[in-house]
Amino acid sequence: MNFNETNANLEFCNNTTPRSLSIAEAVACVISVFTVVENMIILLAIIKGPVSLRKPPYWFIASLASADLLSGIEVILAIFLPVGSSPLSRVALKGMAVVTFIASINSLLLVSFDRYLRIAEHAKYNRILSRKVIILLIAISWAVSFIMFLIVPLVGWSCQANYCCRNNGLCICKEAESICGQCSQSFEPFTKSYIVTGVVYFLLAVVIMTGFYSALFRIVKKKTFERHKHSNHVSADPKFKKRELDLAKTLAITLGIFAFCWLPVVALFIADIVITKPVKLLQKAFDYALVPTVINSLLNPIIYSIRLPKMRETAKRVVMCGLFSGSISGSHWASTTSLNRSVRRKTHSKPKTSSRGSKSSDLLSN
Image 1 (cartoon, rainbow, N blue to C red):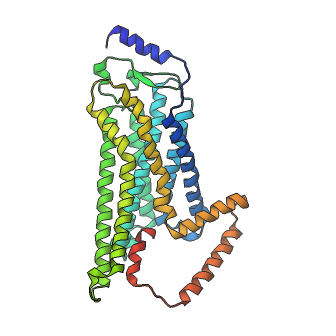
Image 2: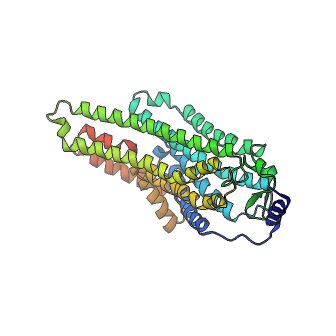
Image 3: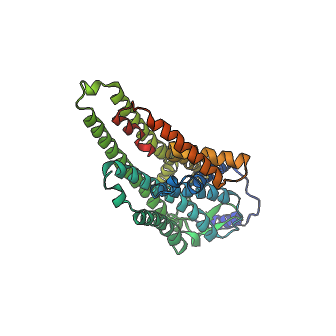
């Protein structure tokens, strides 16, 4: 980088022209608002709803909702919060956003582990995942996110010393190209090793989640087959095939949406790692690659919470109470809970017509 180029970069950073809002940022902001509201409803359903929703296994869902709620807030803050021209402020703000996204991924891993264990070790489930173990797992998942992706960058794992930033705007390298070659172009002012760590973390998460859900599918398929082994033509049983297909679709959608939403930003980071010469397009592309990851935080409550019958009904009551009564009173929950109990008693008094194997189709709703 020659003297004239250095001066041009410093002039770029001294420009006080207000930063304009891009289309991608506007879309991400709108999605984030819905994400915040949606996950707030899930947390209120767990906190204010029936006691059964506050049992330890639902704490994984609460951790996921908390991470996605904070992700939505962080995206909004990153777009509108005045952060001045300090590169360190960018490290703090962007690092905090990464923490919430990583915490969301960690929570998804814990949910997949919980679902696998619930089926694979049903008899030992409560002993293995005790209250203390669940709290420890959630605490570790958040601690790893904070320490690795925020604390360490703040104390030196970043390129803040080599960058200058516009007031509330973009950042650019103010040093020689050989120095900034180790810095990310799409996620400044962080190092390339930082985004390498993020990419590897994501890929490991996909592999682990795939392993848990694949093992879960094999176990359920085996148990369902054993329950029907005394029947004739089991393999041709339409109900057996339908349950197997429904489970496979559910697991494929669960993993597919997660991988698809994160693919653009991961692909961008891989390109950033490989490319060594300055490419302005990398910096501009990040806003667009971020949108699908925000969509993932919007879809998580639907995939992992609202699909649960008990959670869905409770979330509806939260919305109805918020719209029409302005509060969620204990008497309301008591009356609806007693009504549900009476309905269940009437339902249980009727003769059962479904087979035991039907539980496998609802395993992801437990």
